[in-house]
Length: 305
Image (cartoon, rainbow, N blue to C red):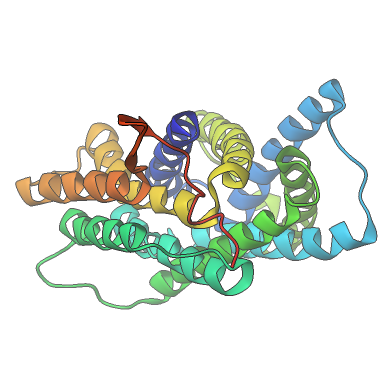
């Protein structure tokens, strides 16, 4: 279980950094073309690996009924809304809105997957969300904008895609599900992007192309595969708690790369975020034959009612 948690944290570190990298890239590319280029790089990478290892399985009609909605929500709508929102919303504010994902996923998992929400998970999530407001809070408060609405849509579609992926991986491997959903999603995004934002509008710098393909392969491809595999091992609700770390990562990367100021209050918030995640995911120690051991009790988020 510890190994799964470490891998989930690595994914969240990459995704938290993506807020800053995405904010940089939307000044170089139109949002739809940015999404299309990244997804193309991701698809080529995943298909190349799948072809070399021959790990892709066959699909049934029932699989397609889950893959197509997953591609629409998890790729087409999510990526388009995310990069469109980052045109007008800064990275830290976007990370705050995306921090609603764990609670949204837990609620959807309770409704559709019958996963339990434990008191420990709930308390840990509340502590982490409190820390999030310390990290990205502002004295003048948040004002609702169209960009925030797009980021909210990105959060909700991501949450829906996690639930669909959890159902899909009951029928096939996580890698197979990731490859097919990404490729299908790319085939939906690319024609829309080319119609809405012709290629002649693109004239970015070389560093932007390098950053685009690197983030597409690592964050959209590799991290998605790792996340989806661990999702089947720890459950949707518990895995989603780690997403609370994203604002902290966005704050840290913004400070290191862009020189964004970090206050003492934000540091306190970061500690609350980490503490909340640890509390929500920590396994209880129980006594067995008089010896304190960590027993793999039925995972509360995987236990079906």
